[in-house]
Length: 124
Image 1 (tube, helix red, strand yellow):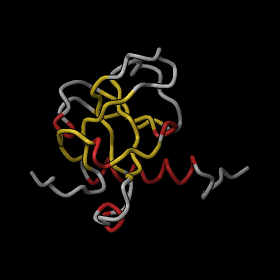
Image 2: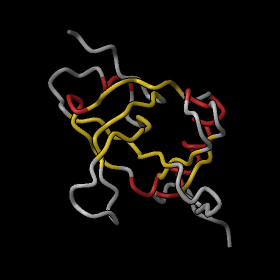
Image 3: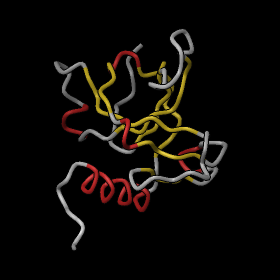
Image 4: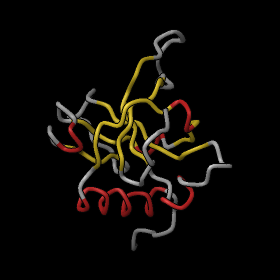
């Protein structure tokens, strides 16, 4: 079975363990694909850069988090994208595609990534 294409802004499920959790707690969690479509379509490159999404502690928002209301990208509950935990995932480990985030939410992700990685700085 051939996988559907992976696109920037897609949300996929992937087997994932948050860094603060114990080993053995791996379960299917949603991640937001951050890498460019060109890189995602490269059949010779096995990884895709993504950020995990959680429904936990949505009342605690950090500068690198992006809130997603229930229904965004077909997610059933209010969630947040944890851009501070951005990491590569093997493409073959991506599970079911859940949905795709809106243009306005992806724009918010872009702005927060620019700040997170130091491409823009706060003015004094």
